[in-house]
Length: 539
Image 1: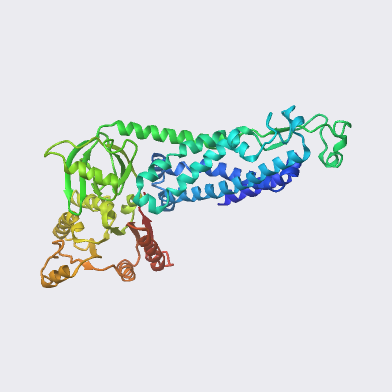
Image 2: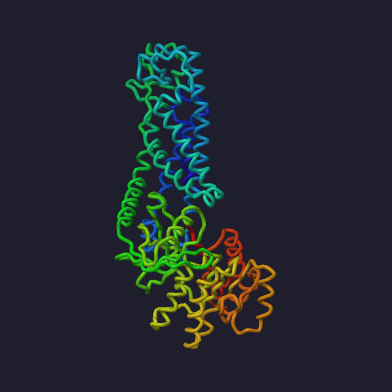
């Protein structure tokens, strides 16, 4: 934000006070700096907008900061938030830039008509207000659709409007394909951006020999070309600069796409296809040279459904396993089609071709950097924690001496009982493993059912005295309703009075805001006491 403000103020003053723009300002008034200052800010933000979506670059940087502060890694995890903020700035500056240039066009037109300089201007390429050859009834609309600057400006603005409007939460969640395809209009946006300044419409005064003394000559226009102090001023458009701002990020992004294409071409084999309850599809996949860490995610492409669409899925397998797995919930057209294809496969048949890009790092990678961790998943948001809990099981099994985590609190919120079924097996294994090793206190888990009916409540009441839960079969009974987070955080702080606690969420934004506030509320000012650090999965 500081750089944006600096650029705006600097270029506003440059065009508002610069002597070379004196005659241009005489025609355009304050609309000149109001058009050019946003253009400078736009150049800077267009430089930034592609970098947060270069996933391989971010993974490389994140890996480089493994030994650095967790604050730096947390900032990299907010790449999509940063991408959105930059997009908002581009939208705002585009609006200001466009409105200011509409005033400029009207004032150029009014100036030409008032001075009736059209015939004179057509004889020179050095004029300040150049008229179009043979166009006596020149109007701003004609400029917008016949010049490089005008036509590219219209195309850029339309592309930006479509990109931004299709990025709204309601469209992205319910019509992902619309969001996906319109977002690729960024190619047209950047192509237009590179050529936009080639028209050189806004002109400044060139240096001449002898020099044109603006402070004296502005009051003696009749003497221009008659006395040495006032030679006829010469004007020229500025050299296009936008391409110099965006060429670097564009090359980086092209390299990013090349890496994705190479990964897409690598063969992916199916090890197992399993349909879980609640219409959840589990795919166990194998790919040569594939290495992962806990909590990471991949992008999946299925050409049988769409050649262009890639969707992110958190891996539920552990790094210690010889395959990687993902769980896919029915959540839209693409996932519905994939599940439908898998359900129709004959027994033992190979699934459709898949492209896999990744893996990519997330906040959950840092879970083993904390002595105490709180893992909170909502619905299918439990997937990164499946990977973590599996990895913990393998580390205990192999007696890994590098495991520094000594306590994990796991919370899972679900609306329906069937969602618990595919994950309960893992928890039962962990529960048994911890007891056998005398580490029953290592994992504290609480499952919350947020939706139920009267028949279910009656069934639970009848079997309440059983040793295991009627829903999951676990020794830990299912809770009904939502967690009282103040109570949970207070308990964690009480049991770990001198620990740094990592709080990890994979779930909705509303829950993220609540948990982030709780982390601040229950963190002690004294650095020697309990401190909570909030981390959220971002896709």
